[in-house]
Length: 216
Ligand code: ATP
Image 1 (cartoon, rainbow, N blue to C red):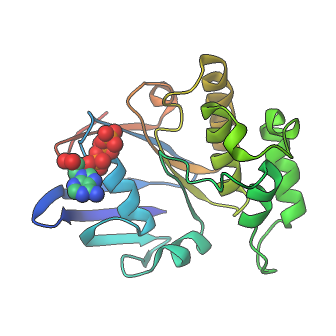
Image 2: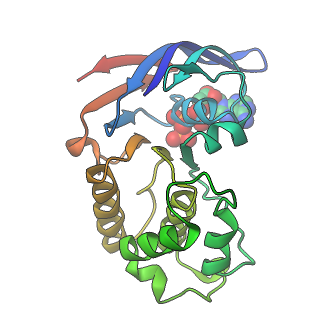
């Protein structure tokens, strides 16, 4: 499904990724671990097309996508949730969700169907549809950020620390939602340091100073 071969990335002269190769198959959950600064965010950002200067081969469903802009990768089924969530904080929960829904008719589900399934996955959001995102807790915002990406109907989710810095009760809800999505066949590549999903993953990859170390 997603294949990465020999990916290198640079911030100016400083190299952040060194010959990273990995793959995520249909419906697989793959976790990337690594210390702060190891390159996890850089890797995910490079895959969705918002990273720094990069070189290497990235294929998605056998098509090379490394020259594609981010919006084209997203349209092709790659969904990304950044560590900093990137919500429209002045807009309500409902507005944040609907603004992400693709308007084209090629999608498998209608925006209304997507909205319903997102609400089923995150019933907590149902109770705060009209609340501005700025008035939500960190964990609720994290749920909304994931829910917003789900409105685009992704086949592979790239998630940067989805359970980091949120209340334990919401960590459990987030973990359960992600595992439910995995059961429904959504593939995931998840950067995490806190071992919330690693135990459920098909593979755990370890990044050390920009190099992939171990495949378990
Ligand atoms: P964290 O969990 O702290 O976000 P990470 O594993 O995601 O860490 P990255 O954020 O990808 O690591 O950082 C990888 C390397 O690239 C680090 O040395 C970092 O200092 C550097 N880096 C990241 N962003 C930038 C940037 N915008 N400009 C310059 N260097 C950067």
